[in-house]
Length: 66
Image 1 (tube, rainbow, N blue to C red):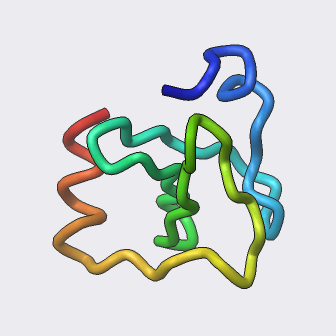
Image 2 (image 1 turned 30 degrees about the vertical axis):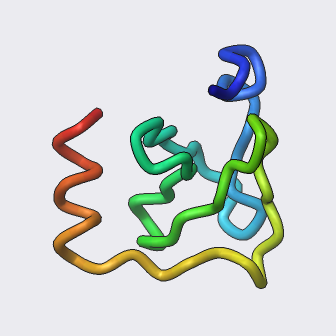
């Protein structure tokens, strides 16, 4: 779980846009760039080089979860 305040101020370090927390996957999803950042122990890992590409199917599922 990520602190709600932290979620409210986090942005993607590349495009500076908001992120969506996908709790079931422990990731922060950027729907504009279709990438996800891991959340490890409640701490978001916001390193652009470590962002994972999200498949079209997973992106569609993430969009319906939130």
